[in-house]
Every structure is written in C-alpha cells, then in structure tokens.
Image (cartoon, rainbow, N blue to C red; front, side, top):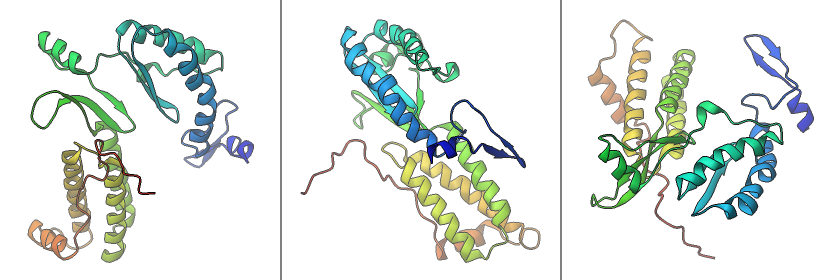
Length: 253
C-alpha cells in the first residue's frame, strides 16, 4: 500500500507527474514516513549522541518533518546546524535552507534586542508565529503565539475559492459549511494568546461572506445592517481559545 501511494504521482492542471525521489508533495503518506524515518535519522541521534555533547540544556521538538531545537548556549546551536546537515546527508536528506536559521530567543533575547534598539526575533512552527512576550502582570518572560501571516493569508484564499464555487448553494447549506470551516480554524489556531488572531480571521471571513452573498442578487441587495441582522438570526461560531498552553490536564482514572 505504501509503495502504491509513493508511485501514484501528483495530479495538477490535468496532468500527472510521477517522481522517483521522495514522497508526493502534500501526500497523506508523507507525515507517516517522516515520523518513522526521522525517529532513527534525527531523534535517536539527538538524544543519545548530540545532546550529551552540549555544554548546556538542549531539547528537540518535532512534528513530522518540522522541528525546533532549543539550546542554552549559542555555540551548541551553531554546531548543531552544521552537524545536522552532515547527519541527514547520510540518509540522503537535506535541510531546507530558507526555512532553517539560528536565532536568539527568550528573556535574554528581549534584553539584548532592546540594547540594540530593536525587537527580539520570532519563528514560525506548525502555522503559528512564536514571539517573546511577558506574563499578564507585565513582569517576566513568556513565549506567546499568533497565527502565522503566511498561514492566515493562505486560509483566507482557500475560503474565498470555496465561496466562489459554493455561493449558489442554498443559504442554510452554505452557512452550515462555513460554520464547519470556522470551527476547524478555531480548533487548530485557538491556542493561548491567539484570540486576536481568531478575531481578525472572523472579521475577514465575514467580509468575504458579505461580498459574495451580495453578488447572488441585485447589485448591493445586501447592506451591512441586513448582514449583521442575518448573523444575529443565524450566528456563526465565535472565536474561542480551545487549547490552554498553561493548564495541565487532570488524570481522572
């Protein structure tokens, strides 16, 4: 079954492209094979060999083929980037240079950036931009997250393309599907500190719905007052934080 998926190829614009290298772009088999392959090529090597050679704290966080590695000292991070390329090269794998960088992050990064008159760097991981922030009382460091701009734009484009094809559906059916899409977005991106990101997405989706519903009838048949009344009668899911990054689940068993 795995072999058949790998040789199935990619259909795009009416043509099928088959490659003998790697897995199909966006293929369902890619995350599975990445988990299996990188467990041996990366995870075990990091835990059993590289981490033990570090001068300070080191930790690897990986999801499929996307990962972030944290180091206490810059020298360990820079050495890791070099040795990572050598390690993956033994398995005919490469690091994507445009998506790989060494950066300073954390409370010391904020302090050092302020001295330079700038702001601490950020990084994207799993569709979220991670940035340096403070606790609710304004004191102490806390890592925060917001929907990555690239993902935000991509999700809106997908929603817009769906609306183009679905705008002739009956309103209740269109509303039902739009609600499901919004719930899916909130369930993934609804993490601590990203409430504003969810609000922005809701507002952008409402503007798209208003625009395309207006095109179904006479010109400007639907104004914002009527649209808002429609939202009151048939409310869409509201943004909410689904996952708390600071609450540990209680085991009731």
